[in-house]
Amino acid sequence: MSAALLIRRAGPGMSVQDQGRPGYLSQGLSRGGAADPVALAEGAALLSQSPTLAALEMTGMGGEFQALTDLRIALTGAEMRVTLDGSPLVWNASHMVPKGAVLSIGSAQNGTYGYLHIGGGIDASERLGSRAVHLSAGLGALSQTGDVLTAGPDPVGQVGRILPPEPRFGGGVIRVLASLQTALFSDAVLARFQATEFHRDHRGNRMGVRMNSDGEGFLVEGGLTVLSEVIVPGDIQITGDGAPFVLMSECQTTGGYPRIGTVLPCDLPKVAQALPGASLRFRFVDTDTALEAETRARNTLAGLRRRVQPMIRDPRDMPDLLSYQLISGMIAGDEE
Image (cartoon, rainbow, N blue to C red; front, side):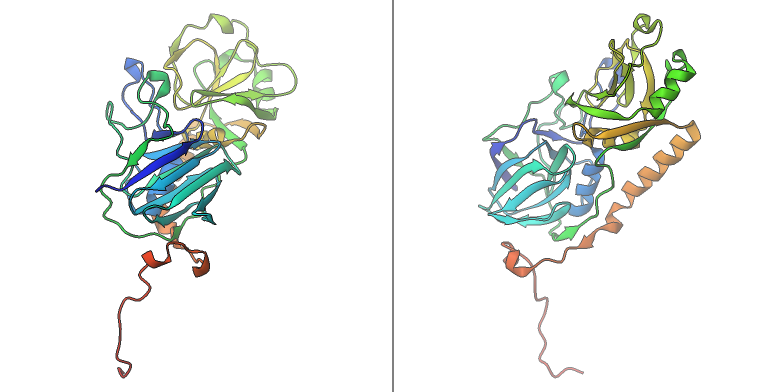
């Protein structure tokens, strides 16, 4: 029997996500996939499996789950309160969940999106080469109470590993490249844009996030006459009231609002994970700097497995203690 996990209580915005569907932009379908792809890579490193496998994305809070078989899990992304049969578990770590055990995941303590990974990945239906739910395109649906998450083959039995998370929670400086309409904005407006402290609006989802600030907006003359053209996640559109709107993984594929810039892909998880009210500042960088930052970020993700460490735990707080191999051999005692 394949490993399986029953959702006894589903939190809001819970969905199966992987790396998305590249290659369909010309056909009107954005890539989609996990709002925080770094979390996918961290979970894969903790479970020693491919980062292409699907995981469960939880928005703001998790839910309650019951293991229908013994299975391995990892928890990454925004840290959430989590217990296994009432005993607390460590976040950004891998654990064994025995059959019948109840996993309870509460609200996020930092960030917005948390991820529950299963050894072997979630074996959901594949559509257009991906298991990711893409709500705006009508591909798949949110996970609901009563759903059973089945896993693919899991040949690895290792758990009890921990990984320091990549820093991306709490906002901060977001690097931006010039976009197709950046030149429409005056130097004074661009300077003010970079000097402004923005705060993430509570209105935000997998399509986009609005940024609030004090003072006047960032309207540009002729901005409402821009022809619709291709747009991608990370583009910063200036809407009709002058507020910036950062497009996220499930954004539309064309749009006519002027774009003041485009967030580097490696910095987009910081926008996704920023809590409502979190402070963010945008800073323009040149192409060479952007390429260097992207290369460095990809190398970091590729090297995550080397940073995974054994987790030191108190045996009294380990409900899964008997699942570990504590003695690997025996000796007579008179060997030299």
